[in-house]
Image 1: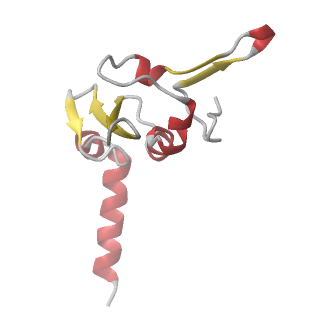
Image 2: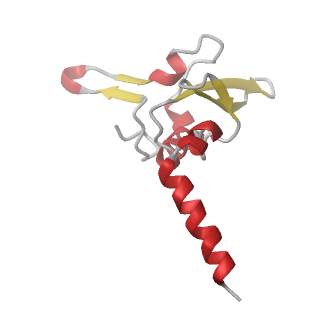
Length: 121
């Protein structure tokens, strides 16, 4: 669904049908340590960009909104975890390093690049 910031995000939900006024981020709702979500938070959220870069079905994201500077500034922290290998992911844009090693297509691509580098003078 399209967020108030104009990005596509599967964790955002809104319903304005027949007088309802519901807007929520279901990723923040799962995290009890986070502050309450506001529609303005979507403008600074990294989750849509991460999901656009890496659509791994084994990646689980956790979004935490924290207050800073007496509550005037809101900081967003995204943590990623691989559910297949049960390890934290350092860079969610690239995904789990163990998944990358296991991917046969990426291994063949790397081999082709290395062979191409060897044939160049």
